[in-house]
Length: 335
Image (cartoon, rainbow, N blue to C red; front, side, top):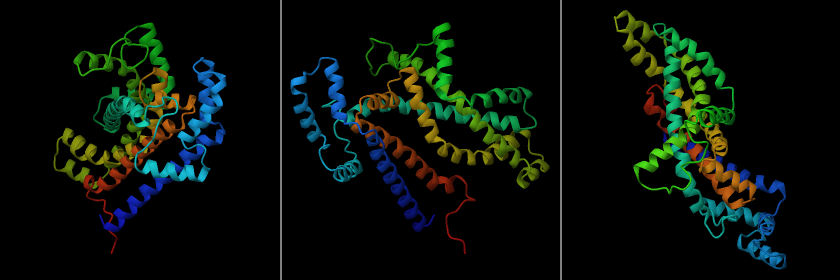
């Protein structure tokens, strides 16, 4: 890997982050709604504030959040603060900082995304490889069509179906939430077991929908590798079937799947957000919905910015380590 390519790739990374952050700044303002006025209206409807001091409070908080400044000045301050990961205070949860609100929800989403992604990638690659392998059982080929049919259904619809059958009808799992109501999060085995039970259905909805994409890509690559010279040579030398399958077939076919995983990461994350809303899961998705409902610009900015940053960073890291995974790939200029 050359220094020129590394600098260019890092430059593209920061350019993508800047463009996405700019779009993130503009999009909520298209609604042309004053978030402070909207929040005050919500509080007034609940009797939390009186009509006599509403105007003064609106002006005070507009100044406090910098909404009284010109739009360009707000944008410059927004970019500068986000470059330092300073998200400021949440409008809906004031005086709590956005960083504190996100830190409470982020671990739930990270665990859900990480575990479900690893499971569906492993199962998808295994299923796709076995479907394409001539010596595999016919049962895998029969399992492939329904798995592919599920990939055409949105995450949240599968989640609703799982809630109906396994939580409402059979009562095997909780209807929603991240843990049992009344229990307090703690570093103990009982709480982890309870949280895992609540996470099964959300994770299962992600796995069932995503496994088909991984399987069909792996099947195509396995069909391609079976005609390669190294496979024919190994077979001619008398290599055993399991070694041909695992060492020569799967090992070479799985490399493009890693790239596919990075490219579909954004789709998975966006699907997880909707799944969390359906299940009432206490993650980033539920917090994002609350920020949209409350016109909480600062919290909305912080959540979307972190999602964009995580996807861009995962893609960058994969791009940089890919030559280590496949020695045939090089970013050095051709002579």
